[in-house]
Image (tube, rainbow, N blue to C red):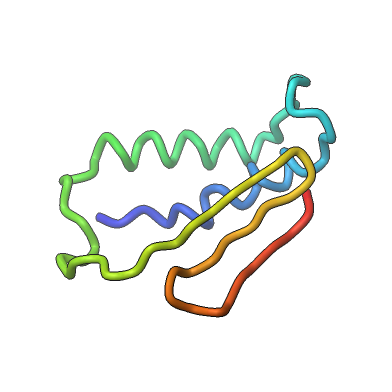
Amino acid sequence: MILPAQLLLCNLYCDIKCWWDWSCAIQLSLVAINNLHKWMTGLWKWDSHVATTQPFNMVLNTDTSLTGWGAALKGSSTISTGWW
């Protein structure tokens, strides 16, 4: 069983992006709470197998701050950045 992690986090990310201060309490929507329940149930049912047995041969360096984020793939000139 493979959990659709990105789909289950989508509504949670939508709730989080509405807030500007990381120290404040966040009101979660019912759909985000339901997604977290599905994730929790899926983890209990997980058979501990991974999606791939291939070794990882790339390193993704990431960094965040209070105003944004960034990522760079080692050995590549491609970078990605964004603002919160």
